[in-house]
Amino acid sequence: MIFRSLVLAAALATAPAAAATYLPVGPQLNVAVSTVTGGGWTQCFSGPMSQFLGFSAATTLADCSGDRLLVAGRATGANSFLVLAQALNTDVLFDTGIRVRTH
Image (spheres, rainbow, N blue to C red):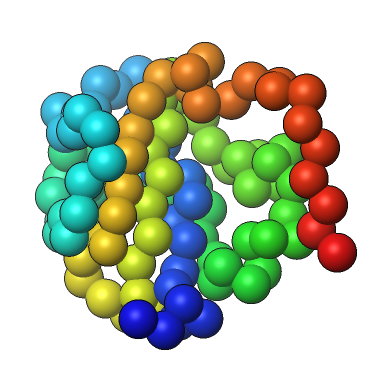
C-alpha cells in the first residue's frame, strides 16, 4: 500500500436535522462511498494525509455539524473507503491532555 496516495475524508457528519441510517459499529473495511453518503453522511473535510497532519482539529472540523462524526481513509480517486469508523462527537472530540508535535 502506498500511504501517500491516501485521502483522508476526515470528517463526514450527519446533518443536524437528519439522522444517519448507516451507523456501523467498530472499524469497517472496504466500504463503498455510496453506502456512506446514501446512509445520511455528508463530507465536511477531505485532504491528503500529508496535508492533514499539519491541520488543527478546529481547522479540520470547521465545516462539520451534527452529533456524529465518521472518519475514513481511501486511496485517491477510489470509490471505497479502506477503513472508517463513526461515533458521537462527544466520544470522539475531547481533550486528552496530550499534545502532539507536527514537526
